[in-house]
Image (cartoon, rainbow, N blue to C red):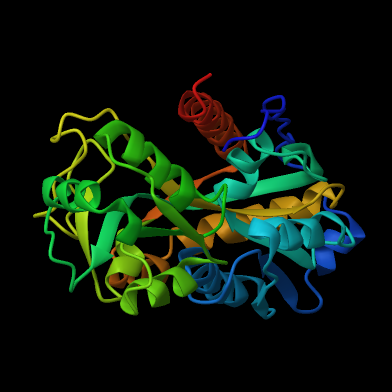
Length: 318
């Protein structure tokens, strides 16, 4: 299932000296609207959070910051669009963890972390294993019993092979001793939830932010502590499992964008993520800001990448 792993991500953080002298470009940047490419479909968490962040950054920068969804190939099309964009600060990317911390361990890619200027992390949210509200099972024990009784009738959705839901569900199956049965990949959260609503799939992994918007119920939270958004949902730790997986989103730019333009974007992102409006909008979705600056985001991605590589190798029996 898991292809031969390639070398881990090599991370390089750009260093910005305090008190730098702005270039002529930075003094006037931005002069026109900024496009933020999300490599997954509209309605998913990366899309929703990306649009909220873009709204706040528009206010701060004085120019429209707009999300554009470029989907396909499990995020590759959108990531490539950012990687090959003109490095002028007017095309950015906003993605969940998979394209940067999972996919490089599964296949050869035309990009790496070094292809981009990482600007910062916006949100970090633990994953739930969810099922349709109409499903007869209400906990993991009942779910596993039903699946083992007739695996052929059980389908699990993902946002594509190599996505975080894909990884979270495979890890869940392994830790809980459950057959992985039939995998149905989609382009993102929205399509996967439609499949659950139509009973074309019976299991998915997602965060609190999307659970509230769809007719699903959480069975277990893949974390060490319960989430106030769903306080009655047990954690994997409570069920005796060493399984913690989260979804995070980060803002990035093509390589070679001028350092002072990146600094302008970094400052705007920090201000946006720390704004009451952003926090309030996320709270309505069951999420909370999880801002990290460039250096801390790079270190965080490296840690996540190492963890995911080990998990994938374990799942592959290596």
